[in-house]
Image (cartoon, rainbow, N blue to C red; front, top):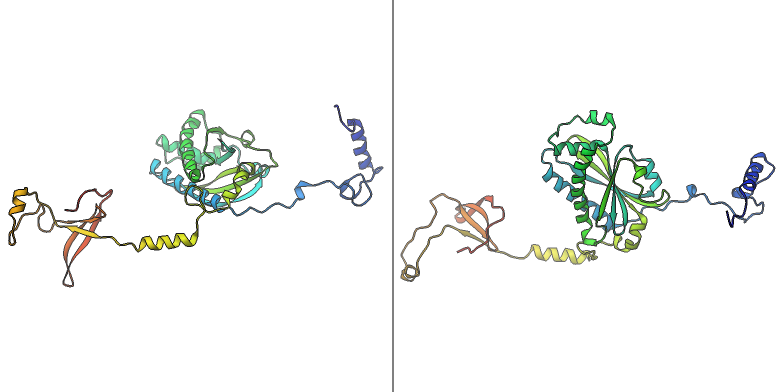
Length: 335
């Protein structure tokens, strides 16, 4: 090879000389005896950087937990999958790969910032697929003992579920305007799902996926190079749009909002009148309402009918007892 300092035979001769003792290495294993000379650097002994505190990144992880759980409960009312956030750490991708199950579910997600990885156990994916085809009560122990990959049909069905999961992940990142998924590829082995070199540092976000009595790990992996340009944003707090929040101002604003006054109105009933009848009304006249005695009355707040209540008297004062709330209270006039 052009530019090579030593030929392969010369390198082999040096190595054999070290092994036989005819050559002596200096401190750190170099070929120099003098102190202060070149010493080889061992990456395995390097001091690892602790996981930095990234409040915004943690909020994103918690938002994904909430969105995933809510959407899955709606899509799988019997199974009711739930996600619990366990925290994040910083490690080499090689370490993450060595700890990965085989086979597993590995979704390589392409974003504008680079590739990220989502993983879960095959048994969990198969149970979700089973729920889609109406087999929620599958034997999990039997599924785990087979240890097989998803079939092509199962992969197609799981891909639909995965697209919904990615929608939840996009929503979690939406306020920061980054990490929106563009494409996804499904693999069964981590060797086929490498998103960076093994020596690259990655953020590993750990979750516990619960479905009935079955619990399994689920993980998101973000390579450090994908987050590096946004590290200042990750270190800040946000409510929306990535804006940092003054905690004192937020508490003061919340206190003022909670002390704002409003008015409740109780409507006993209604009756239609012509303008002629209205103009003819005088003190002492009476009119009929559209309610029977004992029927619930309406409680209005802010132009919306919010509750039905029972009218009565408490300690000598007219009062109303709420019976039940009305969902999506009707807009209108209280009359």
